[in-house]
Image (cartoon, rainbow, N blue to C red; front, side, top):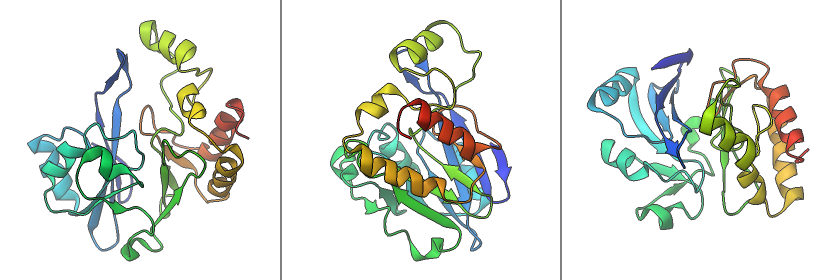
Length: 224
């Protein structure tokens, strides 16, 4: 467990994609009420569950894009009975009921902000802003792997996924943008938000300068 900021923690899990070490970051957010949002699911151990419950009262589970179904069922089983929030169409993928991420629960008002990235219906990624800590939490919009990666990881990420530098958008994500104008409008709205830190779903946390680095990464991909 890593305490990122007051009321904000991350947990890191191994995740292999086509032989590469992608990893999976779970973010736990505690609201002023003491209730927790568990953002992204993972193969939680009993020790993990005890640690998370020690931070507050788990109240919501969330997956924020269609491709993040890998551990959805395991997460739901680990926290039975909690509302599970997700993007449109997610319930058809996982086979259990999902509550839409938008509109966000009223209890999140003033503490968490959510936006759907329009124009990419095969992904339906939603971004979450933790307002008190000025932290933007993303899934696959950008990845931020270590620049010194080597071997198959480096080859796959550079030559197949299309990353030239980090943080960056994968070639696969860009292919899924069906309406560039709508997608760009959503991104510009996000860039108008007040944030400095970024927690990506895969890779290293961007501790500071996140807005400028996000803008650079999206420009590298031809989105901006």
